[in-house]
Image 1 (cartoon, rainbow, N blue to C red):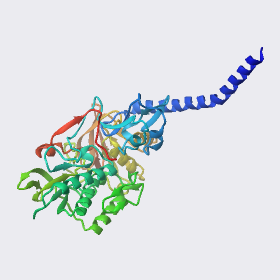
Image 2: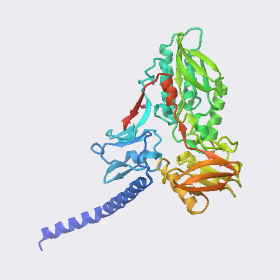
Image 3: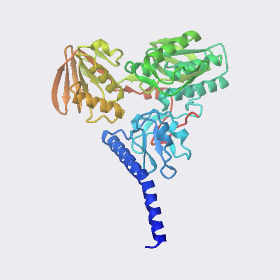
Length: 438
């Protein structure tokens, strides 16, 4: 064997020794990623009509910045040096993946090619086809607090630039969640005469989350206040912070006032509410997608033991409780109740799987079920509620459970009919990008 041949073999061996660990690492990484994607498809969490990332494989260079910077769990992964969406339902729409991608391979979209998501048709200022009527926040397709604040700020600044300030109300803000409260702060900055009404109480959709739920994972700048002094914060301290902020700013929220419709009148609009008509030059709808809680429409639903949100799980210790629903809120409520001592919890879900819930929650619920701490009735529906029991149809079989309390967490009825009564055009998004914050 010649020296040249020996030299080539030595070089090849050294290259193999140097690259083999890298290859093994990449193979193992790809295997883990494939298991994650397979798990997502098994759970049905790989698709969602809510805001989520879409990857252009032709542009993706596999740098992994999107995976590394995403604060949510297992939304994205990489397989063979290409970014892949795994658990799409985990995405909360912060858009960090989109911003850090160096080649623009990621776009946040709403809806899928097969499943459309209906949202209002909005301008770049979040104005509807009805001039002077705006929609911001979750109802416009973005549920993240940071995005809701940005949308509200853009809309109210646009209102201030165009409204003719007369003796009456310049702006009516409907909804007191993150978008509505940000709108109120900007309206105050712009010296607008405004009112804020809310059909429930301050906090909007966040009120329906279980106690100690993490509701913010990204810094947020509030108009006229500055950055919220928390990077991550749970539901209760965030609500407390908002209450304190509104108190310091002297902003009042008129709670328990439900909007019925908005129509043209005078120099602007007449908002017909449960507290009477309100005249305003402009209206910002910050209603959220939840709208009103979805009812089961079964006998006994009017009983006092039936509720549509869970506030204090510890209050139901030692009780027989039924939770109805299969989304993230229902699963979180069922878990928080099942973890209380001597509490017997039955989770009733109309489907066989939990494709609409976050994957991490599904895994925890299934673990509680396997440990005997939680009963799950699949392909089940409540047929009637009685003072001491709940009756079910479980895959065609009638059944019943002793019961003290029922929590119906089956989502809400989006206020689309309200929007239509106001003359707002809706459009269905099939994997279409949304206008986003910078």
